[in-house]
Image (cartoon, rainbow, N blue to C red):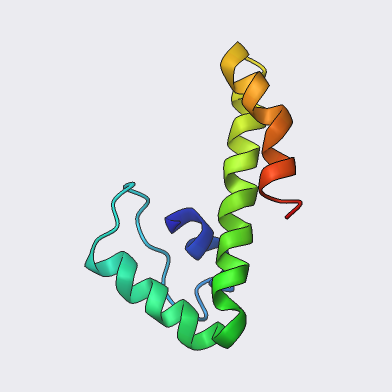
Length: 83
């Protein structure tokens, strides 16, 4: 979620980038609130699709090296991005 929030901040115009530490703490929650305030009713859908895209990219990148990820990568777009 942090990477997706950072990608949506319009180069820091809406809010500052936050450190990607894989933890959802007070700074992440404040950033999420700022994102929702800036983007309004579409914010949740935009963030969900951004997270889906990042997870899909990770599955495809790892799929070239790990057989399990390769299987996951085939079905991922069907169950997430295409919905």
